[in-house]
Structures are given as structure tokens and as C-alpha cells.
Length: 258
Ligand code: MN
Image (cartoon, rainbow, N blue to C red; front, side, top):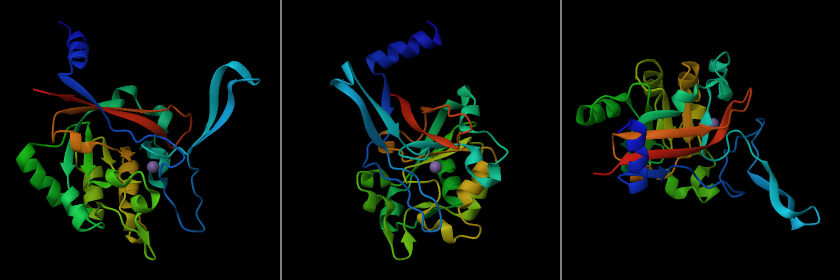
């Protein structure tokens, strides 16, 4: 049997399960909120064109308003100044959109400390138990933050000092960009950097290092808890927005059940 026939059969029989890692996209989907003087992104919205009425008696359709970085989305290298000469989202190779993934679960750490930062040593310890990070794949960073994703205030978790959400250290961001074999880094939070990363030196190190290295980001993922630590294949499908810095994306995981 061909590999693809076997895969199709396995999906039908659910010996390969398809798990949706995508947040529903609606007007209440949380978006990042930058302080003045920075620009902010639109929340998602529908604008009705017709709904089986005078404007279109047999059809229903909407225009949509969305940011490129609204909801579950893909960060392309050109999103960051360090990657300004890199790929826009339409230029990311299709074959890169289907890739192996591992899940590192630090939800207990993030529950104890919302400002928790992943360090290189955490990843090395994980590799000692589970093997190396996947070449050309994704490191998916589970923090339990998807549990908050229906509520913008809880999701952003901001107080007078700014947002408090888990992320990675400066050193870890550089290591992921320059030394780790992965093609990208996926998170459950509103962005790949920690909530406090605006105050790091340099600020937003995960965006700066990974996108500067031509790597990718995936954000606002859900259901990482349903994935095994290793062995997942992720299908991440951003729209090919010409010149775009990112795109809302449907992100699916294939998981083999024994
Ligand atoms: Mn983004």
C-alpha cells in the first residue's frame, strides 16, 4: 500500500487522529494590545453582504476584517525588522507547512509563575528524556495558556506593569534561532515572546532571533495537551497573503494512536 493510501485509511479509521490546534475566530478572539504610541491590530469581524434576502436571495456571505496576527496565526520572517529581507508569508515553501512537532509541557511552571521563561537547560533536559528536537520541525511550547483564550483579559493577563504571560529567555531565543534544528516555535500565548519581553534587552528576543534567522512562529495554539511529547505531524496553513507578515492559520495535528 502506498504511504498516502495508508495515511488516508488511518485517518478514516482514526488510528491517526486529527486534532485541531486552532482557536475559533470571532469578534471575541483575543488580540495583542500594544501601549501608545504603537499601532494595534483589528479584532476579527464579519460584515454581512447578504443573507437570503434582497441583497442576495439564495446566498449568505460576509466580508471579514482581520489582522494578519489575529487568533491562531503564523509569523513570517518579514514580520520583524531582523527578518525584513526574509520571506513574506506567501513565500514560505508549501513543504514547510507540513512538518514534525514535539511538545514541551511547562504548564505547571506557568501556572506557578505567569512570567515563567523557558531556558536552554529545560530543553536539554527534555531532550535527554525524549531525544533531539526534530530537524525542520516545530517546537510547540505548552503553558496551559489556551485555557484562558476565551477571555481577552485573562489571556493577556496585564496589570499596571504590563502583560504577564510565559515565554522564553533571551539566551533560549538565540539558541532556538541559531543552534536548534527546528524550523519554528509554536506557543499558546498571544505571541511567541513573553508578556514582559518588551522590557528585555534586547526587547522581544524570540521574534528578533527566530524571524531574523528565517524561522517561523505559530501562536494562540490550542489543544496541545492532547498531543504526545513526540511523534506528531503538524499541518499549518497560513493564507498566502502577498507581501504579508503573517496570517491567521488553520493548524492541525496528526497523532498516531496505538
Ligand atoms: Mn504574530
